[in-house]
Image 1 (cartoon, helix red, strand yellow):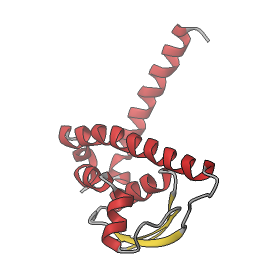
Image 2 (cartoon, rainbow, N blue to C red):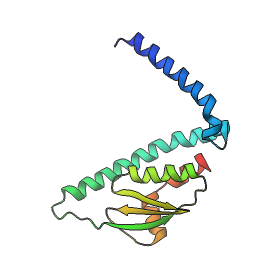
Image 3 (cartoon, rainbow, N blue to C red):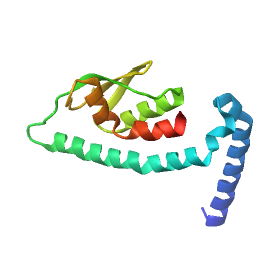
Image 4 (cartoon, rainbow, N blue to C red):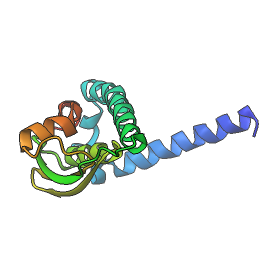
Length: 145
């Protein structure tokens, strides 16, 4: 595919995505276009490297546990709490936790998350929450709440 053809298809795709977004934003969002404030967009952009860094660290941790001859794992399910109020923010936090290797969100009940953790360092809600959520919640609160 040549670059001119690619550019045309990409441009048409962007145009149709914007048109579809324009017609559906009121149905898919409780805030409509207020989600596009520069502050929220800035926090969302700042969240990307935070998430990527957490993912890199978690990948290295899981690789260490898999490659270590003694397989140092201590799996378990822990309960943590969130301060997020927005359902989309809660979903984003659950997905961020699940996408980080070594953890998986199993269930969300109100402000409680049940997480399967490859190495349970603490069963205390607050301590486990700090380890699992890291700074995800801080950024997602600014984007969604």
